[in-house]
Structure formats: C-alpha cells, structure tokens
Amino acid sequence: MARNPKLLPDSQLSSLVSNAICVTMSLKNLLEDELTLLQKYFDEMRSAGIPSHIPEGALFYSITSSLYRKTNLTMGELSKSISAPMSSTTRMMNWLVDNGYAMRLSDPEDRRVVRVTLTEEGRKLHEYIEGHIIKRIRETMQLLTGEEQDTIIRIFDKLAHVFNLQEAK
Image (cartoon, rainbow, N blue to C red; front, side, top):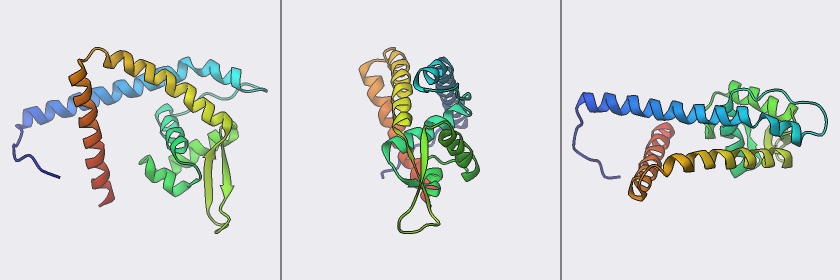
C-alpha cells in the first residue's frame, strides 16, 4: 500500500477525529432509531408472546450481519469478526437464541466447539431491518453528488482495510 508522505497539521487531524465520531454516532443513532421503530415487527413475526426489547442495537446488528454473511461460526470467530469482547457477544447470542433468532450447533469434529447460526426467522429479521437501514442511508447519500458518494465509499473501504490490517498484527 502506497503511503502519502504529506503530514496533516494537528488541527486537521483533530477535526477528522471529531467528524468521524459525529458520523459514527449518527450512524449508531440511526440504527437505534430503526430498531426502536421496528420493534413492532417482532410482534408480527413471533407466533406466541411478545419478545423482549433488542438490547445493544449496534451489537445486535453487527452479530446478525456477520452471521447472515457467514453461517456456522464459532463464538470466537464471531467475536473476532465484529471486534467485540466474548462476554458481550455471548450475552447477545443468548438473547438471539432465547428469542428464536439464532441457534447453537455442536461441531461434529470437536464436541467442545459451539457454532452459531441464524434461524430462518433471524435471517428474515436481519433482512427486514437492513432494508430499513439501507433506505435511510440512501436518503442521506442522495444529499451528496455521485462523485462524493464514490469517494466516501472508497475512503471507508480503505479505512476498514487499514484497521483490519492493524488488528491482525
């Protein structure tokens, strides 16, 4: 990866951090708002009883996204893929399993290993929530030009790649 030798002044770096936090918090709040608005969806999907409120919305979305893309992960693989502590991942998985959105599977090669996957109901829930989130992001992105949209996507892809490389060290 080519490095840019230009060093930014501290004031610009400080502004970058502030703006990144602002965007991150806005995205997290958007996610929490969507999950709150979609609580009714639980009532429609569940045949019996009212499920408990989604705890820790961002963690919920990270876990269901990861399990939606790749099934049968071990708890360790899942925790690492979302960069969350094992205790938080386990707590959310307990909630998902208790509410019928995920299940634990034994590993046929090693009975000590527990794998996790979304149930069909969990996959439907993730698709439903993600559809609403994408709609809200699309509304925001439409405020940018096509070039700005391409630029922001490239920058976030590159930053995610850089952060993943740093975590792997």
